[in-house]
Image (tube, rainbow over all chains, first blue to last red; front, side):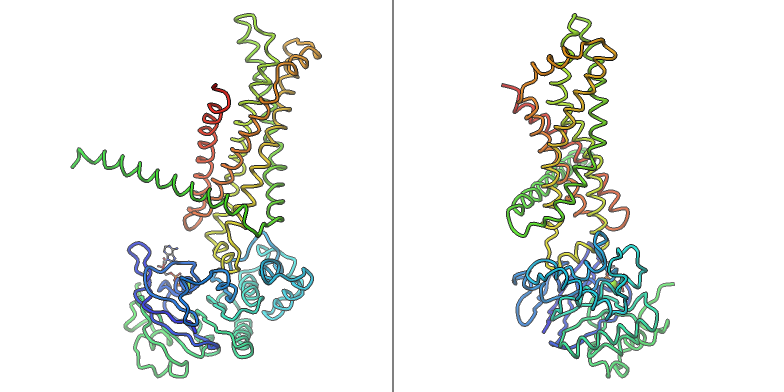
Length: 248
Length: 260
Ligand SMILES: Nc1ncnc2c1ncn2[C@@H]1O[C@H](COP(=O)(O)OP(=O)(O)OP(=O)(O)O)[C@@H](O)[C@H]1O
Ligand SMILES: [Mg+2]
C-alpha cells in the first residue's frame, strides 16, 4: 500500500503540491488525472525520492520512505518516464535489460537479452529494434521501449507517466491492455498518469484528480461519471467552460 | 542604503563563491569515497579511458609539438642576448616536462573533455536519464562520475608523458633544421640535463589536472539547469572552472615541488 499524507512541494514560489493525501491499495491500479502542469509527474517523483517533498509523509507498506534503505526500496519499483528517458549510449535491448545486466538481479547476458526481446514484443516492438539505438526510434517507439524497461525486472510497483501519449489509437489500446494485464495477472500496484480518458477507463481501478495542489476527488472508476464534482465533470468531458480556468 | 549596497553585494558574492567551493569539495570527496566502494563499472571506465586518453592524443600531441618548436626558437633568440644559445636543448626539455607539457596538455584536455562530459551528463540530467538511473538502482555517482574521473586521472599523466616526448622532438627538429644544432649534440645535451624528477613532477601535475577536469565536467553536468540553455551554461562553466583550477593548482604544485 502506498500512502501519502499532507505531501507538500514548492519550487521557489511555485507551490505545486499543497498537501496531497492519497492511498493506493496493493495490487490496484490508480490513475491520476489533472491539468497540464498541476504536478502529477512531481507527485510520482516525490514517492520515488527523486524529488524531496518539503513536508508530509510517504509510506510504502507502512514504512516511511525517507527512512528506508534506498536500494532495496527502488528494487521494488519500475518507472516509465514522461519523456521515456532512455540511455542514448546503450542499445534498445541494453536499455530494457538494464537492471538485469547489473546489480542484485544480474542475469547472464544471453538470458537478459532474451527477456528484453520478450518485453519488447509485449509492447508491440519487433526483435529487429533490439540492436538499434534510442535515437534511431520514433517518439512513440521510444515510449514503448521505456515501458518495456519499466516492466523488465517484474517489479511490484510500477509508475507510468503518460504511457499512451504519442501512440496511435491501436497501439494505445495495446498498451492499455498490457497495463491492465500486468495489474491483474502479476498483482502489481500501478500508478498511471494519463490525459486520455479511454486509457483511464481501460486501466483504472481507482481514479484521483489533482487540482490546485490537492487531490480534488478520488474514487472507483465506476463512480467517476457520477462524482458530482464540477471540476471532475469538466475535466473528463473536456469542456472549455467550467470551474477550471482555461487561459486564452 | 546606497552606501552599504556594494558591501552587501560583495558579501553575497563571497558567500556564494564559498558555498560553491564547498559543494564542489563535497562532490570531490564523495567521488573519491565511491571509488573504493563496489560496484565498479569496468565497461564505463574503459570506454572513458579511450574517450579521454586515446582520442585526446592528436590534440595534445600537436599542442606539444608546436610548443616545443616555438620554445626552441624563443630560447635561441632570447639566449643570444647573453651568448647562451647552447642551453636550448636543456631549457626546452625542462620547460616542456615541468611546465608547458602538463599545463597546455591539461588545458587542451579541459577544452575537449570537461565540455563533452558536462554536455553529456547535463543532457542526461535534463532528459531525466539521471533520474532513470536512480530508479534502476544505479548510483549516477558510481556509474557516471567515478569511471570518468578515474579514467582522466590515469590518462592525462600518460598524455603528458607522450606530449613531453613529442614537445622535445619538436624542439629537436627546429633546433637541428633551423638553428643549426648538431643532432647528436642536441640529444646528449637534452639527455644530460634532464632529471627524472622533471618528468615525474609534470606527470603528477597531469594526474591532478585530469582529476580536476573530469570532476568539473561531472559536477557541472550533474547540477545542470533545465533545458538546452541549462546544458549550455553547464558546459561553459565546466570549461572555465577546469581551466582556472588547472592554472591555480599548477601554481600550488609548482610551489610545493620546486621552491625549497
Ligand atoms: N525540477 C523542477 N524545478 C522547477 N520547477 C519544476 C521542476 N519540476 C517540475 N516543476 C514545476 O512543477 C509544476 C508541475 O510539473 P509536472 O511536471 O509535475 O506537471 P504535470 O502535472 O506532470 O504536467 P503534464 O501533464 O504536462 O506532464 C510545473 O509548473 C513545473 O514547472
Ligand atoms: Mg508530467
